Length: 449
Ligand SMILES: *Cc1c(COP(=O)(O)O)cnc(C)c1O
Image (cartoon, rainbow, N blue to C red; front, side):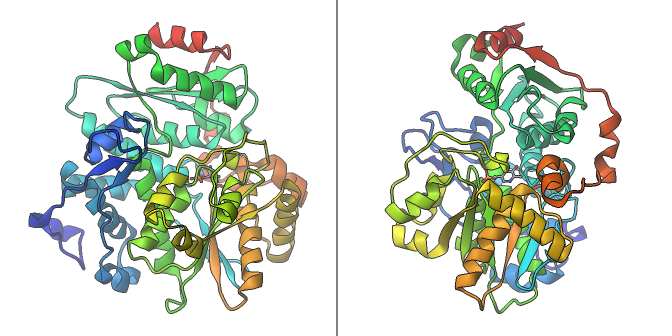
């Protein structure tokens, strides 16, 4: 019955491995994929990491141009899921996760753009959120308890999580967002779904929202009444599927003999960490660049080998305004804490808001291609690297559709961005929110009511 889907590769049905995950703080029990997905973070507050990294099969790499995306994704994720989800169910989950195009478009002479914004909420987070929600839904299928996913958003995460978890049985989603501080498209994505998705409009900042959520996770009373979990990028079920599109990029890369330089606009460093994991396990990619806005503690780390958190500063590429990137410890672990190896594989550049606007403008004028602020940060960072290595070529990850950041794009190009038909329908829907004050007690009252 497998043969339907799998044209070129057969399943190793008898040889299921049992991937285990340990906490990077080393003080929690080992768990399997199910345990890591449901827990999110380990009890000792560490991030989960796979015990033994699988090797990408050479057959997959050699045949990649002939394989459907869903089959590639299945092959990539299967060893990480192990026996927690049967192959047929996992294949369905993967097929739904990547049911939209992820094209690699050549834009400049030596720079291409991997467009990750064709999913339902127009951001790369759709991939991780769709995969995670379906896995969690699968694990809770036969359980009595209902899970509440609690998440704070500055814009993009909330939309992807809301959409990914929409109508998933056994899961309620509560999203906190700062009133008046997300873009119109983002707000509609958060507030118009209904059913199991509730948007709390907080009369405060994103930091307030995040603080309230953090407190809720450690509050005894709330945790006795509700089973809370988070859907942020530290969850392995959100982190690992982000490898998929690095494989799709390689599938579309024309010069297979020449490894592409990969440039990722980075905030919490989950996305780039997934790419590095793909590379370390066998996907032939070249040097990696972490493109950052002025929140750039990783640049300092690469110079000094010291990771010193800073308070985040607000920028135009606000999904990357992170002063203490939570996934960076996974990158350090990936290179077995060997600083020289890490440095050989990873560089970082810092791009200012002024440079971001200039880049959107210049690329629009030169190539008629509209970058969003995050993509623009990546573009300029990759240009800087290629100035030093002019014989190389590479691609950026364009992580969001420019329509989600209209102010910056209008400032740079003088033109608005057309709303894609896929979401123009939600722009007419009425928003539904519960307004709450920016303090923990208000959230607690809501959760206990
Ligand atoms: C979340 C986000 C990022 C940063 O991704 P990380 O995995 O946190 O590094 C970059 N761009 C956009 C548009 C995002 O929404």
